[in-house]
Length: 462
Ligand code: SF4
Image (cartoon, rainbow, N blue to C red; front, side, top):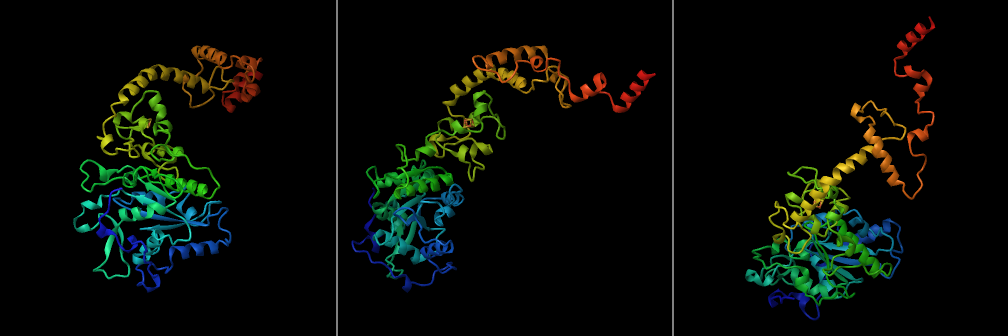
């Protein structure tokens, strides 16, 4: 891991860290509830009448969410998660999952030195429960800053000193201090997992991923390497779902979740976007969108879905709603290492897609007409052996001889070696010929208006 300048090492960097007294600190700006996050959590539990919070050894787990070179998109995504929702984790509503005490730069109650104090406590090992570090955004190379003013920071130390003495602490430095004692380190979003947009060509800030920063040999106190939840922005559920799985494991109630060689949760990232895409049927039949807004497969207007590992088409953006291809956007590979450079220009079809899309086009030209024939045949009830009794059907919609021949062979093949539920043809179904109720009541006049039918009957009687 890259060395940080000594000048950035604040009070918490000393071997015997001094812990600040929050009671001596000034009032917090904006904390209208005048509660700490822990106090709020206790209130929530008490209001739910909970005495026994947890089914396992852990009653609660702290999560320290830090942000580096980030746009806050990951925070927006995660706060909108639904399966499980962040609120479910924060209120301990999921059976077996310990309560999450979240210290987040945007969402936490504390501000200023009160917020920094909880980070200090974690570094000093003074918390009463394990903690997890979640990092959003890429980690800038803070050695490149002028005058040691960090690219991104959280709080300033030492807390007991005046502003003229204090040093702002970069979030990179907090990761360096917190990672060794963390139960898990989770990189959230593509900037944190691979470097992302801040690490794209040019990269004046020397941005890198959490994995690059901590190094290959990093292991948390529970033996886990860095866990990566990529996406720009990531699917919020992927984070909350992974946290839930890890907490159940730490609780002894679940197996160690499976991760791939890049530390991605396997159950979320093993498959490609394409494998679950709502447009995959169009690809398979060889029909492709020409313009944005077309309903077909988007591969020829720049979709990288067939090679991109992501579950957005299954999960949607929020609560199974939206999400790139679902909403008409081609996949630009935002969950992948090398994004954005390796997937640009975004409007061009990926070179590798030419072979497979043309193969689909060729196969589709044979498959499509065959499917339409059998689709038309499947749209007919057995009793409609001559005519479709729908006012919407055109004359061409009536059952033709070709149709009947195809139906005959199709059914032969369909039920070859198995038993058909009922007779083979309408004739066998209705040996005396099928007649609808009006036909049975009024004979050949069943389609005639009632008044005319009466007139006809009178004529016949004369
Ligand atoms: Fe595959 Fe993309 Fe086409 Fe969907 S839009 S079927 S992901 S190539």
